[in-house]
Length: 563
Ligand code: PHB
Image (cartoon, rainbow, N blue to C red; front, side, top):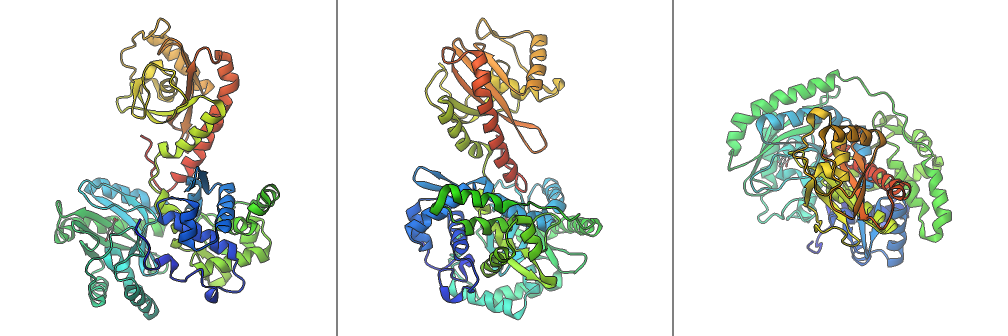
């Protein structure tokens, strides 16, 4: 990453400048948020010394903050690096769940992308920027594609011209000040720096035109080739823009003018459907929200002592009080949901308001802002299941002193393919690496994956005897798979290779569908089959649960690639 020469958008108020911080703000919470933002901007990983430089904090402070974040499961300490974990996405999830737009509109955006065979995105206004809350990506030509949580400068996008139609004079002044301070958009790490800044009037003209037309174009404002057309999705109760829906293409398929002629009419139909959905959906049931979160922070303080920054941990739990049916909460409701004292919750909310992560609304309630997505989402929003699993495989492998792997079924369904692996030593004659394929019927992972499919959808391929012990009778294999399904694991003993024993368990999505298998394999002299079940199965199951928790958090509003 290039050295930062100008402050970022998210640093518009310099958190290091004590002059602008409200007296009641919680300093450790401000520092913790700064650490999370720097890690996010860096793509998810930084060394403690790089964090020291990026935040201007002392090393001892960085260490205490990262230890606290690690205890909360929001980062892990990987050798010398601090790495964001998928669990951090629960903060952005709280915002997206409270917003409700993704739950109500994602499916329509996805349908439109399928129908047009072009990318479709949903974005909300974030001050003088736009932030993506959904991406249905179909990008074939060479062009950037953005992630949920990415922030773009309004004036370089189609949705930005729509949002600017609602700007106040103060908003316009803030936008001009940002443009003057950062003419190359260095504060927007998701976009390439601007080579030739053009005059502000150009955007004001586009916004005025968008007010007349009810749609806006982006003719390669971000990079050559990238074109987009956007239409506002209006809130049926207020008439204001709730979000903007965009169709994004490439000049190799559509010019900007062509987009307007061929795709805009269909985008408008989809947006009319989206607005109908918003009109017809009843207000959500008030959700119950988490409770008693603050209790464990006291326990961690006892455990970690000075290394644990309790006020940071308590402050972060405040964000998770929000969610579906919990978009606008009073101080009392936040305190109740988190188990924090009112005074503690109040100071955290004041801190978040100062950081632009929370706004106070009428009726003495608070809501999360899109900026909550800047805490992790852009860095984590496209993490694959293999990446999610790898640190858990490493933990498992170090506990059981055996290699650990993750695999999926190939599209044809008769083979497994390794997607992640942490090896201790080589026990198989095949050199197993990520990408290796093996016959599904004769492997423990294959059997776990096959066992989840209805019999009619299994394609076993040819059942060849790979060793004298390989099960090759289709009827016997069917019976065995039913057993695997019932018991939730598969043990394969020298059926793939003489001297090799392996045991596997399923990894499931939030609907319970098996998306991958996790296993460990060893030489037969290491453990008896009974010992595999008594000693290794509980470890495998605990690891599968840990992977599933991260996976479900990451997969709630983004699509986590599993293969
Ligand atoms: C996108 O979704 O990637 C997108 C949308 C609107 C733009 C540019 C990019 O103007």
